[in-house]
Length: 90
Image (tube, rainbow, N blue to C red):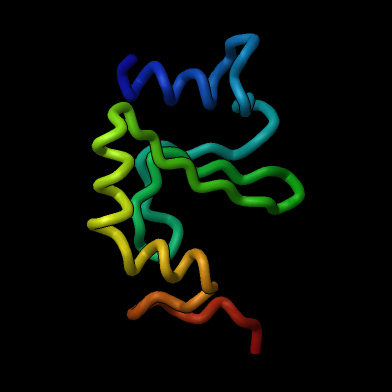
Protein backbone atom coordinates (compact mmCIF):
# COMPACT_ATOMS: atom_id res chain seq x y z
CA UNK A 1 0.00 0.00 0.00
CA UNK A 2 1.30 3.44 -0.87
CA UNK A 3 1.29 6.56 1.29
CA UNK A 4 -1.30 8.14 -1.04
CA UNK A 5 -3.67 5.18 -0.60
CA UNK A 6 -3.32 5.36 3.18
CA UNK A 7 -4.01 9.10 3.14
CA UNK A 8 -7.07 8.59 0.91
CA UNK A 9 -8.38 5.96 3.35
CA UNK A 10 -7.97 8.33 6.30
CA UNK A 11 -9.40 11.41 4.59
CA UNK A 12 -11.53 11.15 1.51
CA UNK A 13 -14.89 10.59 -0.05
CA UNK A 14 -15.03 6.79 0.20
CA UNK A 15 -17.44 4.87 2.43
CA UNK A 16 -14.69 3.76 4.84
CA UNK A 17 -12.68 6.97 5.31
CA UNK A 18 -12.24 8.31 8.85
CA UNK A 19 -12.80 12.00 8.03
CA UNK A 20 -14.83 13.47 5.21
CA UNK A 21 -13.60 16.79 3.77
CA UNK A 22 -17.08 18.31 4.15
CA UNK A 23 -17.12 17.67 7.92
CA UNK A 24 -13.66 18.93 8.87
CA UNK A 25 -10.88 21.26 7.73
CA UNK A 26 -8.07 19.11 6.39
CA UNK A 27 -4.54 19.98 5.31
CA UNK A 28 -2.01 17.59 3.79
CA UNK A 29 1.76 17.91 4.37
CA UNK A 30 1.59 21.02 6.52
CA UNK A 31 3.88 22.57 9.15
CA UNK A 32 1.00 24.25 10.99
CA UNK A 33 1.56 22.66 14.43
CA UNK A 34 4.63 24.11 16.18
CA UNK A 35 6.65 23.87 12.97
CA UNK A 36 6.55 20.07 12.84
CA UNK A 37 5.40 18.50 9.61
CA UNK A 38 2.12 16.60 9.70
CA UNK A 39 1.18 14.31 6.83
CA UNK A 40 -2.46 15.09 7.58
CA UNK A 41 -3.87 17.75 9.92
CA UNK A 42 -7.59 17.52 10.71
CA UNK A 43 -9.46 20.33 12.50
CA UNK A 44 -13.02 19.51 13.47
CA UNK A 45 -15.79 22.09 13.90
CA UNK A 46 -15.59 21.96 17.70
CA UNK A 47 -11.87 22.78 17.56
CA UNK A 48 -10.45 19.31 18.14
CA UNK A 49 -7.19 18.88 16.18
CA UNK A 50 -5.65 15.61 15.00
CA UNK A 51 -2.13 15.31 13.62
CA UNK A 52 -1.74 12.16 11.54
CA UNK A 53 1.63 10.80 10.52
CA UNK A 54 1.39 8.18 7.76
CA UNK A 55 3.90 5.33 7.86
CA UNK A 56 3.88 2.63 5.19
CA UNK A 57 6.72 0.51 6.58
CA UNK A 58 7.19 -0.71 10.15
CA UNK A 59 10.84 0.38 9.94
CA UNK A 60 9.68 3.97 9.19
CA UNK A 61 7.42 3.85 12.25
CA UNK A 62 10.26 2.71 14.50
CA UNK A 63 12.68 5.26 13.04
CA UNK A 64 10.15 8.04 13.79
CA UNK A 65 10.61 7.50 17.53
CA UNK A 66 14.40 7.40 17.28
CA UNK A 67 14.88 10.46 15.10
CA UNK A 68 12.16 12.64 16.65
CA UNK A 69 12.56 11.94 20.39
CA UNK A 70 12.28 15.64 21.30
CA UNK A 71 9.02 16.05 19.37
CA UNK A 72 7.44 13.03 21.04
CA UNK A 73 8.65 14.18 24.47
CA UNK A 74 7.00 17.59 23.93
CA UNK A 75 3.75 16.00 22.74
CA UNK A 76 3.68 13.57 25.68
CA UNK A 77 4.50 16.10 28.41
CA UNK A 78 2.89 19.22 26.93
CA UNK A 79 6.27 20.97 26.97
CA UNK A 80 6.50 23.99 24.68
CA UNK A 81 9.00 23.28 21.87
CA UNK A 82 12.08 25.48 21.58
CA UNK A 83 11.41 28.47 19.38
CA UNK A 84 7.63 28.05 19.43
CA UNK A 85 5.52 31.05 20.33
CA UNK A 86 3.32 30.75 23.40
CA UNK A 87 -0.34 30.06 22.71
CA UNK A 88 -1.59 31.50 26.00
CA UNK A 89 -3.86 34.56 25.99
CA UNK A 90 -2.66 37.73 27.72
